[in-house]
Length: 292
Image (cartoon, rainbow, N blue to C red; front, side):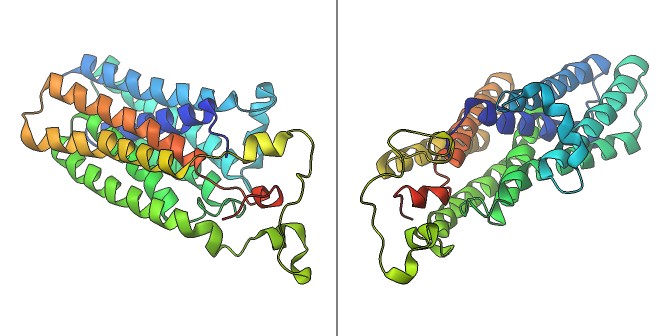
């Protein structure tokens, strides 16, 4: 799949924002309203910018509001509905703390639950796709939730919990890569099934179906060399899990160390998210000569 910048920003930034909301809802800062104001602004800013970035990938961004009407059948629509509910609920919860010094635990927990549901809906947009076997596995929503929770724990300063989440994220990511590498072959989709010529025997591409590129080739087919893929996987793991874990276990995590840990994790997150899209093989590629 083509790794569009808008979708990478959407899935990465919104996940960080909603993940931070989870921890602010469960355990708000106790140092005063101004601290909550900073954290709440960060959470709302990340999630809002991420959601707005997603509209840039639409052919007609001005029609994005119509997506809300399809919540009965569309995970994208469900995500939009729940995301708005989350932003409103968390906004009210944070406002009461910042302006009036009043903490309403029920609102906080509701915000946290809604934030997790939003991230899950985002994950299911990709998990539901039968045409992309690499994404259609139980580890896809697990990864999205772990990314959100890990980022939220790091941003909110929950050091001990974040170390456990980092370890879990690293294990889940490696498992998803291993499983994903087998997914297209295991799906049963082949050039024979894509062309409908299976009964005639083995199929090979003599000439491309088109003399030039088309939408499917631009958006659904993206080739990345195995060598580059493996290098980027290592870089992603080192940045988003390895270095943060090493620093968290060996140094006293204060402001400078915490900033390095967060920046390293976010950098690794963007690499991993780029790979999430770049490595995904759409079965339509089989029609154009790609093989699993």
